[in-house]
Amino acid sequence: MKLMDLLGVMPPVGADGPAFPSRLLGAFRRKSISFCTGLTDETSVVYWFQSRSFTIDLRLPDAAATPVLARQGWVGDTLWDADKQELSWAVETGYQLHNQWPEPARFHYIGNSVLEFAPSGAYVEDWRQQSSTGPLLGLRLLGMLDRRTGQERPMDGGLILAGEHIAYAQSRPPSIHQALRNAASLDQARADGIVTAREIESYEVSVAIGGRTVTHSTQANAVGQEIATGDFELQPDGSVILSRLIDGELRGLRFAVDLHLPEFAFARQTPCDPEALRWMEAEQDHLARHASIAL
Image (tube, rainbow, N blue to C red):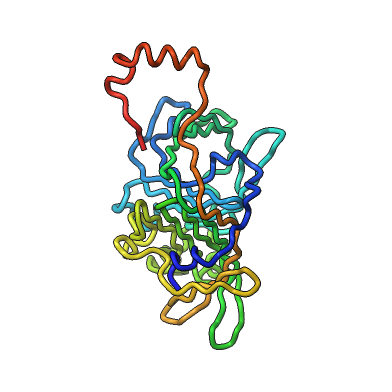
């Protein structure tokens, strides 16, 4: 069955919500990042998709023109520190070989914007919620099955559907991942002949914004194609198997269901003091003259 068919047969999972504020669930586009140096980046293509217990992240500094060695993408477990009100991530695998964003995050919310502050003061990121209403699904990749032998090997990744937007992550095949375990960097690994550019690019993080067609990806040839192709099967134990071709062989990717809410209202507004609302209404001719919803 296809992904939309799978949604129709899956029971709700995780309705009790995450440990962190539920307004962080969904699909976010980074509008800007401002650094303590006074520099601001409003150009890089950056997306953050959040499920109950894991994140998918894609960063392309030069959009589709980003060189193979400069692409960023990862999937990681989400960790919430209730005392400090900080979110952090445990990343087992990523497109790059080291954690490029090691700081936890503190948040402030205004309208449809989530402002992420680095505790060190190094930067603040302005994220905009892309989703409004619709299904929220999180599938966490656990392993890859050999359909002929039944043997399963560890593999990292996940799928998050938030309303009409989808993110999909799939780590490099185990043999390539193993070859890179002791490499200092992708640049060095390629220079030393440990991996080819095609093998580096085999780590996939793709997003489909506003449909099922990939709009941005760490894999250049994925853009314009359907995201997360293959046949989904709901297993008796509640897990999900996705059958797809990997290196020319039919494999079964086994996912745990992290979250499934058939209808979810994503947060796009924040509360405000009544007096402030009256001021905004009284001054709307000036305040709203050029204002619009920025996604």
